[in-house]
Image 1 (spheres, one colour):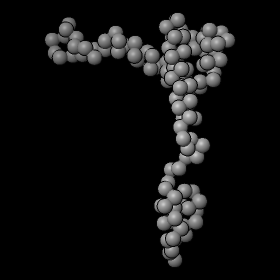
Image 2 (cartoon, rainbow, N blue to C red; image 1 turned 135 degrees about the vertical axis):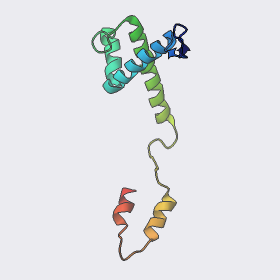
Image 3 (cartoon, one colour; image 1 turned 60 degrees about the horizontal axis):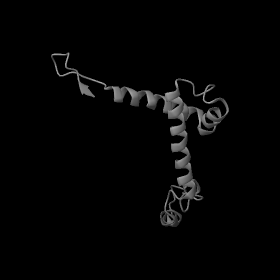
Image 4 (cartoon, one colour; image 1 turned 120 degrees about the vertical axis):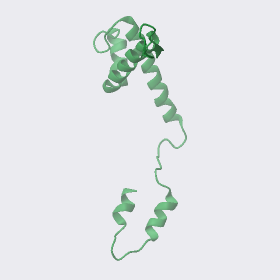
Length: 113
């Protein structure tokens, strides 16, 4: 944001860099809906003409987006314990198993956990 000097009050407007960022963000959101495989396939097979579209600048952004997504996927796959995701501590689940109540059954809750 930059101050708009043509206005008497302290008004602001989006800078050129901000407008470019918003255009890029809009494209990234669009490609997120399509998925990495589809965008990459389009870039490789048609040069981005079928699905990516837009000027050469947009195709460069698409390659940047694909690289970011692929590096994020690789980081998740390389992380230790990525094959099993523990959301709830085993200790906490054991505590649930130890609970007893005449009013409530905890079996379904434990299965969900």
